[in-house]
Length: 268
Length: 343
Image (cartoon, rainbow over all chains, first blue to last red; front, side, top):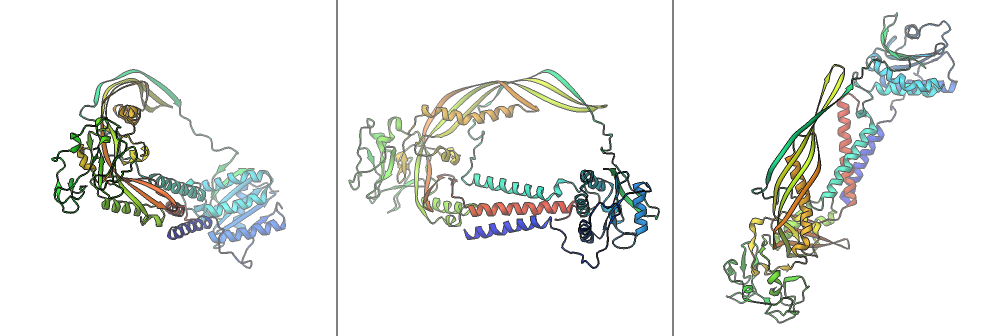
């Protein structure tokens, strides 16, 4: 009895540790002293407190991925293209976690044209390719549209952090990588196995249809398989031509300063 | 006299059936008598049924207290093996008997071993030190021989899919299916004792029917035997019900190569060819644990144990958590190897 209980506790503990540890925020917190400004709120979408909170968060998560998570909002009075705007901003401010013009992700909000652009440079170009940036953008667009900027920016930082945890080339939204899915499947397997064990503890029926069959005298005496008719149905193959709604699009490029990047743009 | 006992011709002790040698043996002097060669005292006697209400032990003269179903037992005073012969004659005469091949000690050992293997049973139960009693019982069974004539009509489809140009095509061929089958079952056992749970007895199967012997009363010496509570006609529906799933799967096995089959007409004509009254060996184990009694049955020939043991909640929880944790760990590993990060 006691041995069984120990076992139960141990295993439950392991289960909990694995489950709870996964969504925890990164442990290494960048100290206030070496935190740099990553929020460039030129369009004044955020108040001071929101700004400092987001900045702390961007520093903290960015340190873990060795990448600057930058947010740029602008009223774009010169009516520049949002892509060029992002590239020039990167060149001018020499952004980058590891060096000037190094690893960085930039979220640019063009409030004039209500367009948003996401760009990944260097490490972020590999880890946040067009597809992943597209996925991040599509998940924050509804918050951006409704003006919930703080929440949208938080999601952007968290998603960028999360996606950079996956090797380039794999689909970060694969359901196999979902912790809750993994937990659910594990619990299901445990339940089914223990259920079968309990069911079988009382002994099983070990006879089958052949046990009492007198095979010498049993046989098929007569059989017929008569063809009647053939029916055919056809279905048109869907051609996949559209690139996803909402006026979105992917694509990176190279800045005037010669820095190549991935990207995703769309309106909100 | 309706009570039969087996006295050793050498020393006068009571003789018992020995499961190791299959002979009637004397525990005092070691005399072994081949049962198939000694004349059965039962054959010499003629009774009218249900005439006798009281039995007396030939050895000590005490009343033999039995239940109405019992046909063999031991005297509760002197321990002599007695066979109540009027309950084994006429309509109640078994055709065959399957003798025990597992002795009481072997049964005990086998049961202990089985208890140790219980993954979900409480540790206190696994030691099997509270076995209250272990009793060898010859349980009455009917062995049916059933002949089935089966005629089945049905529809089957074969489906082929292919792509041509801009279209997916699904081509379905329809077939008319007809099967005429002769399907015979022999030695299909149905437990005829009212006291034994059907569910428990069904799980004890299969019994090795090639070991069946022509019935002779000395096989019962030292065991308890019961007479049937239900006749073969009364249990015929249960026999048919037992074969119906076998018949269905036999039919399905003759219809292959189709993507789907539906039966429009199924006619099964069953005739009862024969039903033999046989006695099959079962060790009943009564076990007290945590103030409740658990009953187990062991096949007296194969040693297979059935019966619901107590389930330890802690062990269930332990296995559940353990298996879940291992599954989770392996899922995490898979996701890590796919490049998804460990946590």
